[in-house]
Image (spheres, rainbow, N blue to C red):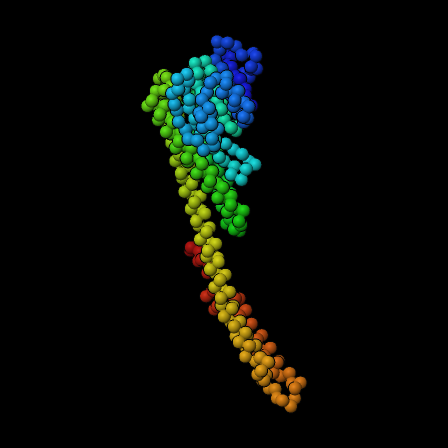
Length: 330
């Protein structure tokens, strides 16, 4: 979808293509674009085809370039999709900066672009394209920080559920959160390189006010990177801890099963010894209906089974093979 925005008295207004005021700066907002819309933008504004393909690449990193008729930039924005298994991801947005027109191309939609079009960003002006781009980066950092806090709350909630009972669903959710944090870390580092290039290359003509705002954006971006790294380490530690818990529980189960199997081997040995070719105890060839031998074997097997059960339920075997309780502090 392609929308056209122009600003009047500090507010962005959606205008149709026929009602665009000439001589007034224009924002061409292309989100969830189709192939026909991409061709339309390419033909109308002469944007390089390879550059557009880079803008549509979900894995493209941030960068800024100087072309003959325009400047281009690609930055990473956070995306929240509640219907996906990995709810928090990132997506690139491409910008083509002309003299009086700025074109943004994104293969999906995100909260940052919705905030811009809804006039929820203070001080946003189409009259200063460098400041407009810096405002987008600042809003992206704000959304990164907000999503990171939500990820941290979700991680704590999953951890509390795992404390009660370890389930595969919660472990998979932790894995998806780890993926989101990896996406965030990579995108934030890429945006940090973009900020440094904006400062060093001077492709965008920024004034002193924009320079101060750019410094604030770099601070927020570094803070978001540190938070993403910290939460990533915490999530990785939680997953390792519960992996160890699962391993310990499995060891406890295997230890008990091993003891039971060893004890029940007595029953197997008894029944195997007195097979068809060996006479049962207390039996003779004269009285073939003597059941004393069979009863003896049954009692012997039941005694062995009871002994195995006692290992699982009664002391002192319970201390050896059961889970030890921790003593509380006095």
